[in-house]
Length: 196
Image (cartoon, rainbow, N blue to C red):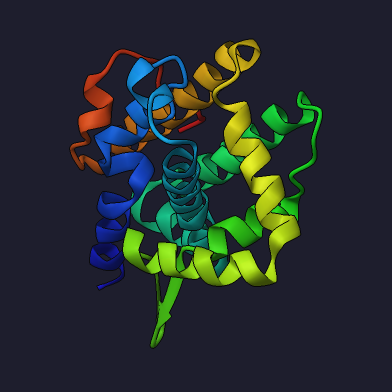
């Protein structure tokens, strides 16, 4: 049961199963630069929120040690190489702040609690939640928007590529440890380097 529950979570995890996330974050991709600013911000908030939400769920539900029990050192490696840590490094190089609890807010804004289970929300659920938050949490959303807008700045091109490389490495490592196919892992890139 536990194995199936978290294998499904891994399969549905946006940074593992959604091949479009890698393409989505590529700020140099001209298609995304042509999107309306509002659409770009809201959809990027959602996608980034989902990546952070999966990691947040894994922390709230103590999934990392359970993954270690099922797949060897998978949980430890994922915990040590969380995307949130790489995003924090990215933010330190910016001229604005997006604090740890801002990242928690973004993650939790796309988490739905159903009974005893957490899941990431659909885009429609998240969009409704963002509309409610716009009235209540303007300050936090403004900082989140600054983060999203920074992805599209030329000076951050290499840093954004580093974030993409992190997602790729995580997906490849998960696929190797779990034998769950991932369309992301078909793309060229390095795999996480973790102790066995």
